[in-house]
Image (tube, rainbow, N blue to C red; front, side, top):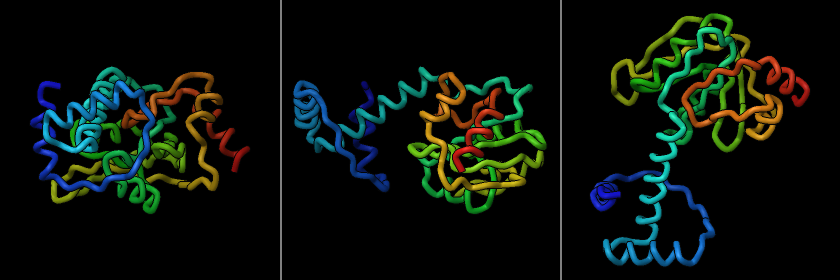
Length: 201
């Protein structure tokens, strides 16, 4: 947290779309946030947001979200649609029937999808919203002016689900914990997910 103050100052010049959210917390925690806001001469919202951002960084590190798994034998993949970083990415994948990832090192996940592999598109807070089969052909395009920073594959037999399969349903179906925040994870029992989707939709 030593760089919290500098992060807060930098955030003042960066404009982002924000979503309103209500959080109930113990009075001691709220008092600390009030005191920190006074100390830094910032709003409680700015302080709370930065504390949450720092907590997310710690969680990402502990969950090893940036570590690629060895997926040589996996023919099923769970790809996060990147909604937490850019809401447009989710719509891009659904509207175009593609699996995409952005920037180094995350974009290289797309290279692990072989022809015929099933890719489930997972939207944070919703669940699996679509799936299709990899073409095995990695394509590239520019990302906000950055050359070739989007790697993607077209998905054959692409299907958008009328009823998404939620995180709880996925865990229950597989009988194990799944890390949904990672860019892409292998799903060794992916056929169980397809069977569950077919029953539900």
